[in-house]
Image 1 (cartoon, one colour):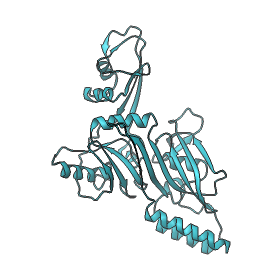
Image 2: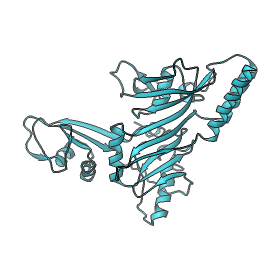
Image 3: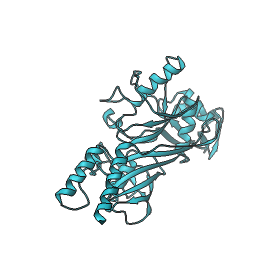
Image 4: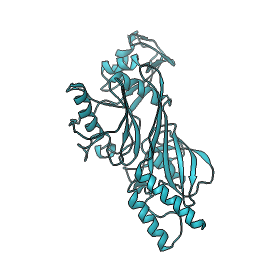
Length: 341
């Protein structure tokens, strides 16, 4: 995948591998077995996965010295290898909601790219966190460890690890779907039901590689499930809450487009057009004003619940809907009131 397509994604940053040991497999330590099977996997990363309980043999966690037997079904969740991009520390303000020795919760602003990549080597969240962590610790090697991303133009809560063990254990939580993530979204149209579920495999669009599309046949793409419920109705648009069961690239954006309720002002998925409403000039001006107030997709990562990767304590964090989304929501509230007068 070209770097420019990696840069603006919302996804969980881990790889899942599954192997079945051959009938003639000789006794071999599982760390050595996996190093031979997985390209570019270091022994340290595999050992971290074992320590985190992320290596399963026949559905049971094993240690790194387990001896593989014929017919063993082996699965492993690995964090993605670090990219070869040089991270330049930058003194950029970051809203840190919580921090301890192992994790950080950050309230990311809309417009900020998460990780350096083609076209955005500076000014990213990782650049900012690298500066912060090195200043804080005095360690010039300190760095952040990503376990998921949110899009450049999506705001909200994001979880970051501060060491490899925490990163590996959090990757397992994401894989097991035990991380609870909720988003607030403003979508075009009046949802027919009060709540529902969107299930449909996601893969890159055949003609536009920068966006995702739903392949309902189940044979193409990756399994993806989004649950939603209505928070408030405004007639031509609806405010909803989305809960992620999986974390695929652009999942919410592509799923809502698929059910014909794209995010308000989501240019990549058709939400930057007037899709519902009247033809009156006054209404068109109202929408134009809304788009100007919120020059991005109306999506905010509202909350995140997790089991702490070291202590095991359940923790929950949330963040207020930012000013640009709040302004547009209030505009719609006033519009609805005036329509009834």
